[in-house]
Each structure stands twice: as C-alpha cells, then as structure tokens.
Image (cartoon, rainbow, N blue to C red; front, top):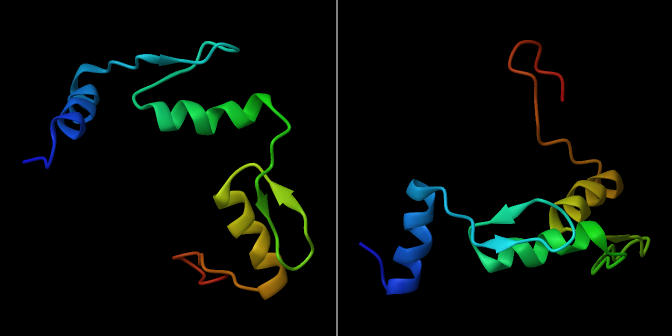
Length: 85
C-alpha cells in the first residue's frame, strides 16, 4: 500500500509506461518531474556538486562520489573471478 495518492499515481506509471514529463530540448521523457529536472543538467552548464578537496564541479551526485574516490583511493567494486578491485 502507499502513503498517499500521488505516490500511487507515480507507481502506476511503472506498469503503464506513461512518461508525462517531456524534455523541451530532446526526445526524452520521464515518469516524475524530479527526473526531468535532473536530466535538464545534461543540456546546461550547471554543475551544483562541488568536490570539497579540489573544488572540481559535477552535474550529478554520483559523478562527485566517483570522483571523490580518486582522492580517497577507495575501490569498492571487485571482480568476482580474480578479486581485483
């Protein structure tokens, strides 16, 4: 069950394939408005995620996290066959 009607409406889009939020600059469309807003950065120079170590800026949080690992040396993914990370 869902806490509110809007969450249920969004969930229904998983089954219907409905993507009512259309990008005005390309053919992509999205199930929820937040996805469209995040996608908008693809078409802009906005880079709101800034590295506190070197001050390089990124369009998305996952890009910043991946970059941050270059400072920490963290390598969280390991090959299941040879265990190289």
